Length: 230
Figure 1 (cartoon, rainbow, N blue to C red):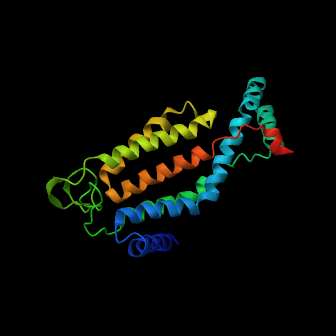
Figure 2: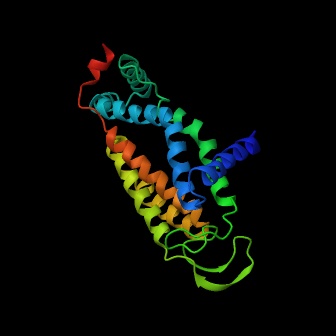
Figure 3: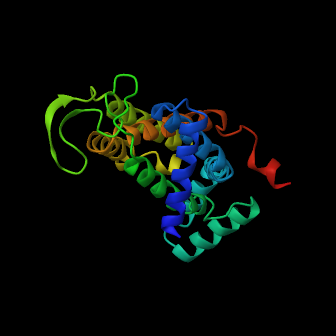
């Protein structure tokens, strides 16, 4: 199943390269990212819609938490009643992400492992090597050291991850103080992109950019929750 998913996604990327991207791997990766984001849009919509509803329920949730802070059973009961009243599933924010995770991991594997044939893109000399100063290939074999790129994609990946995370958390007050999400993930993203092929870095940046566009246009509506419950 796992190998079949990776093989299927690899064929999509190769089809784009051969038929739509003018045999340019950089363009193919960007097209591939947009296509996958569009395919996953229904799940993304459900996740963002859940975040919107949770934000709108936040004042009521805080009242319940304050009122029943010493009674965990009553707190859980009243919280569930509030969710049910407003047609919100407690798992609404988790299930879409859990469904997407295998696809996301497979995508990273496909982009990381694909043979770019030494082809470059923009300032990058070889898409199969990191956008960085390289001393060895991805198999660990020594190379004559040179700048395959100038660390631009790792920086863009880290900054876009930071901005995307901040946008998401601004729509979810419950996560607003989670500094690990705010700072660790962007730093981790930049570190990964320094170590892995530029093709993966380009996918990561394009994915974050598209995610921010989705978040911007799906920012929480201002209408009260009660309207959606009628």
